[in-house]
Length: 221
Image (cartoon, rainbow, N blue to C red; front, side):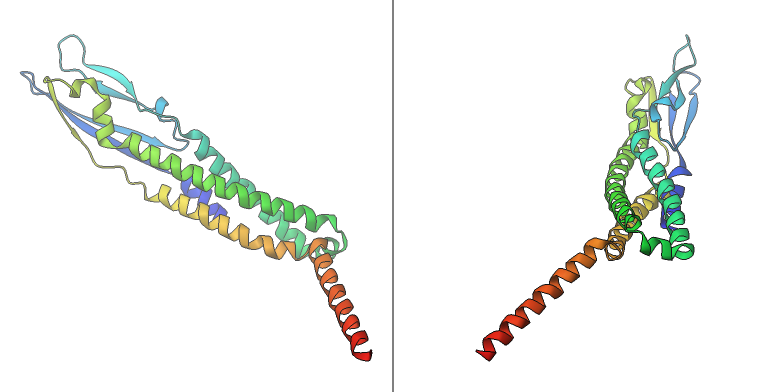
């Protein structure tokens, strides 16, 4: 369930940023720029038109800066694989529990996969959190106006629009770390089903019995 929330919030995110350009020409043209962006956050492919305050041309095609698709796609892909593995594990636990307990390989494989997912969730959540911070910086209205050359001269006055709402993306990072803690806690319960846990208990009981026998022998002497 938390995996669905994680990749759902990230994969379904879409936002917009913008700015206003007011030319200092005779017509006093005012142009509103609205830029839409979203998953997978390949911002360098997102186009917008920068107005030109001259008589030769009206606008110039610009792009946002940065490509943050790698951490976003890794995060979403991990969430999807986690969801399918969880469903498969539940079916195995509930419908084929006897087969799971009788075959020693199943608990060992389950434990190794669980540890792997725990590690990957930590990496994915941290990487996507860093990527989201970079996305916020690249889509900030001030970054948009800073990238437009028309805003650097005296021929126009530029002002930033509303800051993009990143609430859904922030929630996805939160669910990423929640998934890490859930998988980390699940490692212990899966480990208890492995032969390694039984061997540790048997060794502990054997050591206790040997100590008790030695103590009894000493008392008899």
